[in-house]
Amino acid sequence: MAEIQLNHIIKSYGKARATNDVSLTIKDKEFMVLLGPSGCGKTTLLRAIAGLEAIDSGTVTIGGRDVTNVPPRFRDIAMVFQSYAVFPHLTVWDNIAFGLRMKKLPDTEVKKRVEMSAEMLRITDYLQRFPAQLSGGQRQRVAVARALAMPSGVLLMGEPLSNLDALLRLDMRAELKKLLRDAGATTVYVTHDQVEALSLGDRIAVMKQGVILQCDSPLRVYDHPVDKFVGGFIGNPPMNFLRAAGLAAIGLIAPPGYDLVGIRAENLDSFTSPMSGALEASILVVEPLGSHNLITAKVGDEFIKVNTRAELMPEPGSKLWLKPMPDKVRWLK
Amino acid sequence: MTTRRTNLTPYLLVAPALVFMAIFFAYPMVEAFGLAFRDNDTGALTLSYFQKMVSDVQFQPALTTTLLLIVILIPIQFAVALAMALLVNAKLKGASLFLYIYAIPLAVSELAAGIVWFNIFTNNGFLNSLLVQSGLIERPFLFLSYQNQGWLILAVVLAEAWRATSIIMVILVSGLQSIPSDYLEAAEVFGADQFRKITKVILPLLRPSLQVALILRTILAFQVFGVALAVAGTGISLLAGEAYKWYYTIRNPNVAAAYASVILILSIASTVVFLVGLRSKNGEAL
Ligand SMILES: Nc1ncnc2c1ncn2[C@@H]1O[C@H](COP(=O)(O)OP(=O)(O)OP(=O)(O)O)[C@@H](O)[C@H]1O
Ligand SMILES: [Mg+2]
Image (cartoon, rainbow over all chains, first blue to last red; front, side):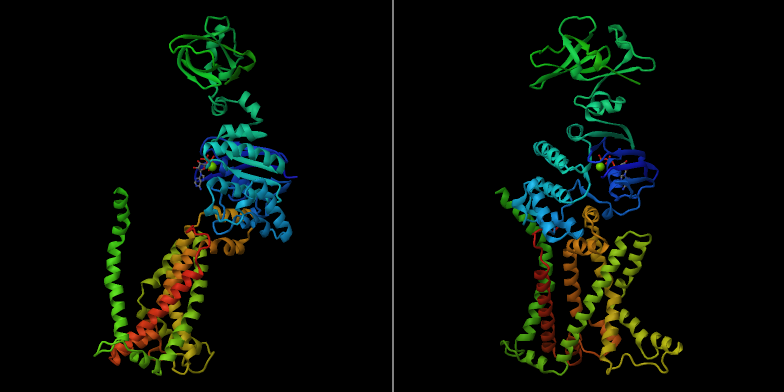
């Protein structure tokens, strides 16, 4: 059992609060992604869990044990650093074995675990090499192997994919997903890449300026963002936001107190002729993306992005009628 | 053509340094060897000056004492310097102030440092006054007598350690500061306690700095002269002191040059030992 509980974590640097009263429970074996823009406090929170950062107030418990004042080495955690932090003076083998030896595991057990985890990450051929003789991607695998070799219940990952090139990142993402599911550790994964968050997480905690705005499953976060920030941060293109008043004309009446409507680009049906319940839009840009077209248009004085079928290829300047799918309309404050 | 031109740039950049080294180091070095191994009158190669040096009664003690001094001094200095450097690097309050205070002896000349320690150990020095006044001994003890070689060497070691340990510390501190904190954090997360963090991560990563400091310190230790002169006078003989004596007192530059050659050869030998013994296995300078 390695449930992680964060209770009212506050960490300030000078006057600014990097995490402002954050509470979060990460269930045993859950894959939690911390997502948010640069400087929102993701790394600070991860380091607070690791014990690398002393927090000003609040408590951290891991597996029911209060570890707030426990140094990292007694927290039963493994970690993958953004910079990999693979020791340059040790071979790949010794790097992976580092934590196991520190824990004084018997040699046979060390050997077994090193080989198993090297195999999982397909780096068996490089075990005798030094990190300087590896590519960035291979070094990253060593960092993951070193963490997975540990018999710990908690795995902390700080933007492990951000230094890889786009293609490698895609490969590694899928591979990580499988590896981590098999490993069955409680995982906290930091990223500012919303695609990574959606594809990996059991739940995503979306952060902004030191607070968690929403913590839900990827689908829920994508489909039911709690506010404009979350909706705009997640998804590509970002969610469209229109003034609620403008939609009364097509029969969509905002509940009292809500003045904004959020609708995603794929949740608008588009027609080339006027249609009841559809908004009239004038097309500004058409971007063919192969599987579909991304159209940027203007409804009144507001911009909107719409996905259309690849076959629909209207001219810029022409009109398009957009009909929101009623069950996909999100009313926001 | 362009590649040729760009390839010249690095050589042009090091050229001034090379010229400087050639004029002020290589040339005198060759001259010194010439003095030591060439007959003054005929110019023919000869070992006679070298033999004269070796057969001198002071040669054996000078060589042994110099080596002994190094063997005692270097480990002490490195242990102290490393401890200090780790303390400074721990970023405790006042650590940088401590660094500056501790580096002050660097600015004190060899001779002045020697005189300070002479005043501590001499007959009516601080140490004797303290011991006598506290009643531990009846009469002042002759620390710095020719008969007390052990005390003489210890006094020189202390003086030299006081004077020149901080240069090692400064080198080590800058080495420590160049170690990315991620490595230390990774060590912590993966279960290393403070001691193993030092032995398994910090020291290996500090290897380049340790190497530089060892080479520098050992070469300088072969040349210890002023400190010994001030503390022990002619009480102990060291290689550098003998070279000075043969040059100025006995006025035989050839034998003096022979001594200089011995110092040079020992310095080069120790440098090679440190370069080879501490070379990196992974071909990476960190
Ligand atoms: N050591 C520090 N000293 C001062 N301020 C810091 C320090 N570390 C972080 N901060 C501040 O705390 C806030 C949160 O930083 P944090 O590193 O947690 O952000 P992040 O979400 O990880 O951002 P990124 O995606 O850029 O890595 C930032 O405003 C940052 O400037
Ligand atoms: Mg960060």
